[in-house]
Length: 296
Image 1 (tube, rainbow, N blue to C red):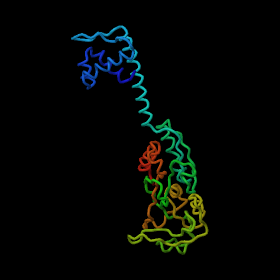
Image 2: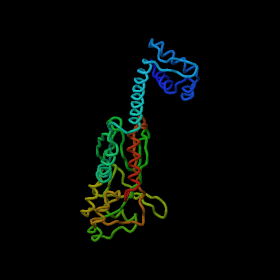
Image 3: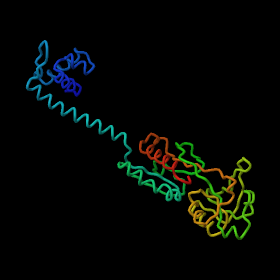
Image 4: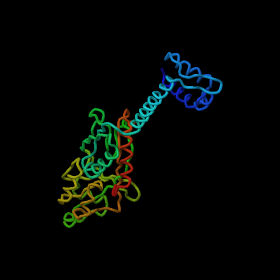
């Protein structure tokens, strides 16, 4: 017994003749008749009594009709349920993100995403190290700055403004820099990769790198921010790290007429995970939310 034959039989019973059933099913009358006959032969019973005008359903045919309707309804419900589950994000999503950015901007959004996607479980690791997505078993990562691994699929989510700043005490104790070139005479607090000492600024419409030196380097922006608040030197940091300190007067923005190039925020994932519905849903959610966020 085939499901298609049951469907043909149910429609034939409801139409009461082969011609009307064939029209509803967009099949030929001969094909509909043959399939009903094949169903009868397979079951070894008479289901319909045929005459020139209409079909009459036998008692066994009526019983099969009722059962077939229930079976077909269950099959339809199952197909719809499976289709719905395929169209909804689900499963475990392992995400790596930078520590400072994760606590200030990602953390408030995770709960919102999970409330709207109840079938998703999220495992987040906040770290300023660049993880090996495949080796460490991550589905995706958020990264800020220049991407070096061309084997990853990257989607730009937002741009992050960079801010040059120092403490009020530092500015009061010594003449603050008036131009980016003046930074060579100031202790600079270095945030980022080891060996990178160039700070970029746009000077007269041209992007230039200024070589700077200082007493402290850290791969965590909050360490650099706190050192700047303590008056140890000048810092160049993403706005999301220093915005609160600037707002409450702990830090003062410098060189605001010389725009440091913004950093790009990316969502990256391995190539074999690009088609994941869950990854695509989370990435799109972040892009929409970050586009509306202040200071990012």
